[in-house]
Amino acid sequence: MKLKIYSNQSNKIILHNNNINEILELYNININNNNFQELFEEEILGDIFEEYNINSSEVYYELIK
Image (cartoon, rainbow, N blue to C red; front, side, top):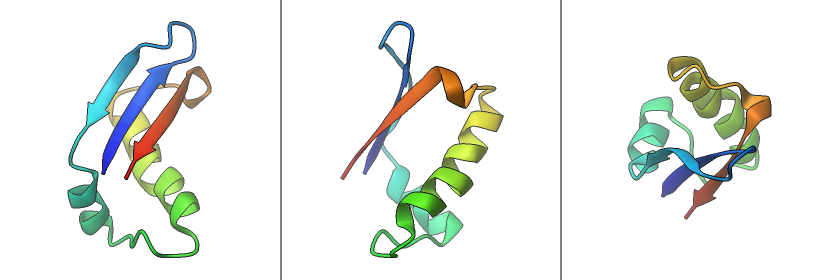
């Protein structure tokens, strides 16, 4: 899976990650889980936003399976 995070203002990619499967394994999140979207956004995206100092209200993301 790939993750792309875009700026709301410019629609340009500000972060791209091709190794989301590895991150899912680290967080022990299964893509078949009924709560996958919620877990992904709260756990992984939250940490990514914090690590890269990204304001979540200024971006949108695309998760490509």
